[in-house]
Structures are given as C-alpha cells and as structure tokens.
Image (cartoon, rainbow, N blue to C red; front, side):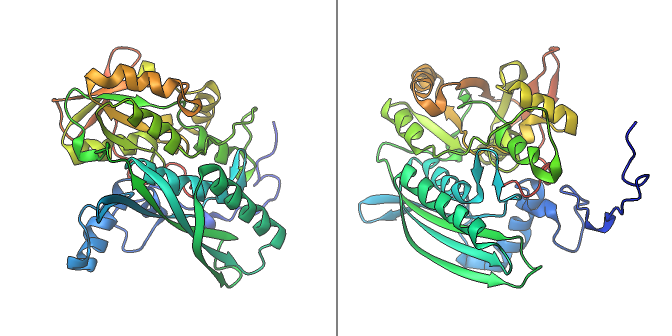
Length: 359
C-alpha cells in the first residue's frame, strides 16, 4: 500500500484548506458566499440590497432588461476567478466571453458588445496571459461580439491568483421573446440542452493533480444561436437559465422560488455521462450540483414542448436535449426528484458550492 503524505514525511498545510459550504453564521466572508447557493442569496438579500438602498433594482439577476426607446436591451456583468486558468476544453478567457454571452442569451438577446477588465497578479508569465487574451479574442469572434472597452489592473504578488476577468455585455432582445423566471408556471415542461456536470468535472480533473482515468473537456460554448433557433419556432418559452454555479439544482431552486411553482424531476432522464457519474461518485459529489458552462434549462408551455425540443435537437449545441421534469402545483418553491427506485427526494438549494472557484 502506498505511503500517505504524513508517512512519507510530507508537510500538510491544513491552514490553507477551505470549506465551500461552511457554517452560515460566520462574521466574515467565506468561500460559500461565492457559490451561487443559499449563502450567496443571503449575502445579496441581507447585505448588498439594504446597503444599496433605493438605488438597487430588486430584480437583480444574471441580466437586466432595459427599455431604450423602441428596443429592449439585455445588460449583464460577470466575474471569473476559475482555478486553474487553463483546463481541458477551455481557459478563463473563453469562459469569460461565453459566460457573459450566455447570460444575455437567457433573456432572449443576441449579444452585441462586451467589455473586458483584467486583474493581474504581479509575476504572472506574459506568455500565459497572452494565451488567455487570445482565447478571449477567438471566443468573441466565434460569438459574433465586439470587445469595445476594458481595463487592466495589477495587484501585488501573493494578492491575486494570476488572472481574474470581469466582463459586461449588452444584447438586443428578440421582440418575440418574453423570457424571465417569473413566467414559469404549472404544467411547464423542463428541458435541458445536453449532458450535465461536464464543466465542473473537467476543471476538477486537472486541479490538484486529480485524474479520473479519462479526459473530460469543458462544455463552454456560446448559446445564443441555440436560443435563437428555439425562439424561431414561435413557441411560448417562459424561462431560460444556464446552470453554472451550483449546477442544475441551484438554478431550478431559484426559478421555483421566484415563480412560486413546484418542480418535479425524473432522475432516470437526467443526461449524466458515465465519466461524470464516475468522477462524482469518487469525489462524493451530486452531478445535479456540479457547474455547467455550455448548457441551458428551458421552461416551455406543454403545448409547445415537442417543437422546441425538436429545434434544440437539430442544433449542434442541443443535439442531446431531453425533457427532465415538469412544473407542478404541489410544493411551490421546492424541487423534488423521483429516484430510479421509485422514491422521491428533495433537491435542496445548496448552501455554498461543492466545487469552489469553478467559473
């Protein structure tokens, strides 16, 4: 049997360990506050919104809808602190572009322009930064957006983590679309555009030297083309979200709470690749809580579900789209899942995040 680090004489730095889901009564910021779960929501509700006062829009979400003259614009901002900076299938650069594009797309918008701000740690190799910058440019070209403004700051060595990126984006909303979480309603069909948990496992596969016996590449991709194809069907699409931090579980809980509907899933229909299932089993993770970066969840009126599903499956980024559940009148604000054994379990909003620094 191989020696443990302690037996081999290695020093274990326990002070550097962090818990992504700590006790919620901490007087200080902890990793769980950035996980997109209950602690993030509490931080916004109980600290930021009261501090902002009347200046805040209580509907603060992944993107805002702004009426400007005769057009509706979507506006979004996001920050990316993923570790490591380069991972199978992507980098923090293309992740930043695609993540912002997708927030706009979830409002039914075609992305137009982005801003990019880089916070760099002193000592970061220039060739590594150049690789990330090229990834930003390539992803922007692929998404059809312009990088129109930005900023650069440098922090002292030891006070950053190589590269952080902040973005903002503006998109033009399709006049046929009225897509917002409040519109999810009883009877809606819940569709996911493809395999879940891929991005989180891809990042974990190269973090801290972990190996799972197979290469899993991130699913990061711009989703506005897929959304446009869905809108083009003329269907009544009620809500769209990309399940990033906190995974499918966090996103469904947020929509259930916002729309005051119950959501019932069928675990047997969840598209979880074998390698993701195996990696999650090894790490003790639930794939429903693992981050995604190139997938979306759609809430569609039942009468329109078949044509939306067909349109998604005809698109390269929705080829494996499948129905995973429905909105129900029971247990409003709660998500449940029917298990393979015929039982039912509650799918809670995570407190923090199973995998911190994932996007």
